[in-house]
Image (tube, rainbow, N blue to C red; front, side, top):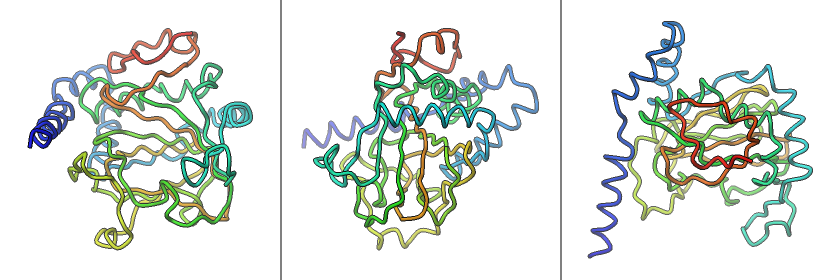
Length: 278
């Protein structure tokens, strides 16, 4: 009984205090914007708030060539092979490579896009409070047919309540290739910590067709991981992407971005407490 009470109190605080947006803070985020920029941010927010997913085609097209070059170096020198099961990591190569934190100190362009002014402002507006860049990574998925029970290929939510994940696509991807599938609107369903997050194909049949996180390289996909989503592996084309998580201060990890890239970034909506200045 005591355990249930503690869980109830924890989830009550998380749902009604931690996740509760501040109207005053949102207003402050708009105060220094031009009318055009304010309208754009509010329109993007409305889509993200309604669906739980927002796709910005070609958002980083100007720096995509540099991002690709940097990503190749990170994959070559700072990645590990992710196996079908956790115990298979670095033992069984199934064409899934994950960039670790050690390479971030050299990641000039990755740091630049992770701390993009408009994206971080929009995500802070979604939260209605200041945010942290909580986690950074990168993924390469080689073409390969893998059953749907493979890790994040199963339908799931991330079991961390409200959290924003951003994908920067480094390769052109369409919905028939390796991509993320997301069911719009399901981010608004409260999911208890007792929930393991996994959903069966039969359970998901009650929902409409998902949105496919696809586009040309340079496209940005923003989604709330409390919504139901899954990955997809198939023998079509390679999928490369950079991944960022943003929270309102919880579930954060140390991020070793280069000091000269972040020292002058002082957005009032971005906390830098977990960014290790080297």
